Length: 160
Length: 179
Image (cartoon, rainbow over all chains, first blue to last red; front, side, top):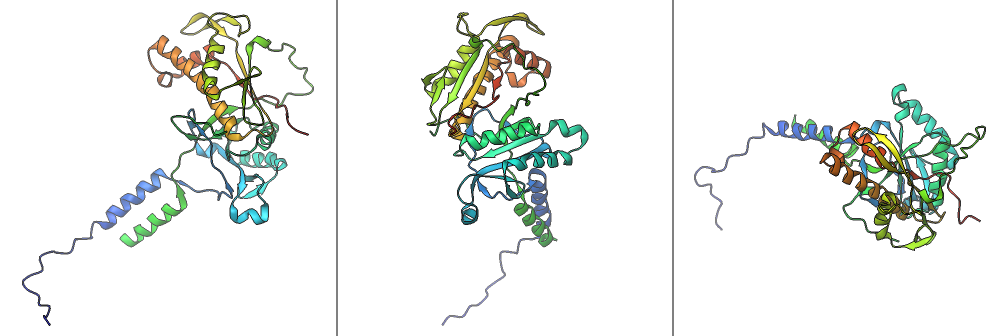
């Protein structure tokens, strides 16, 4: 059997890792700058509808989110398959929306209270009945600025 | 050092999201005060474009079954009313900054839906209506100021908005289809 014999000097030197922290910090700062904290765990399936005219949500701090859709598969044994309304981290009813809006408004400072925006993230297969109820509840809570969340596409095709 | 940085990096990767939200901005009407007498000046019927989506997600414009792809054109033509037809919106001479005295269409779009309409279809229809209005505004901006609407300053934008105001009304939903 041939023996492994080192012949001559090792030609490749190990790469210096002294600049690795710098690189990783650079990536870290990039992510800190461009991302936002995840605030709620969405417990419903929301496939947002497509549209061409969507505007970008500028100030996320002014926005409150309402999710409507079927509960996730893991939660369906408990909550069924009917579309549910999720406020913050729990399933709620139409009647709770007014309290939720009041609570969210309380968290904004005085100057921003009128600029409050409610973002509706609703599954595209939801029936309009529940959406209309939510809209009426928002009107009663006088949260009149709303945004129908959508994904922007160039060309709209209709799924009837 | 690198280990700590990696740790932080992984934390941020897990705890944050990068998606930016987009959506259609709408303004809901206020709930009318029952103590205040309602405005008796009903909007003239010729000014209203009635768009309805029924329970089978079919589109009806002024009571007629319409292809979804035509909605944008129909809406645009309705708002302009180029031939001053009597069954299309009236025009009112309004003094606007940058434009002077111009005839402004008094068109209103009324969007109604059934209780069983799919949300996705409703949004698609709403999107078309907003797109029709946005296109008129853009055309006007190009014709008048030579640049796209998006690049106008706030004053000019406001003037163009007033030219084609065209409220898209979501007022007082009729709960059609409810037993």
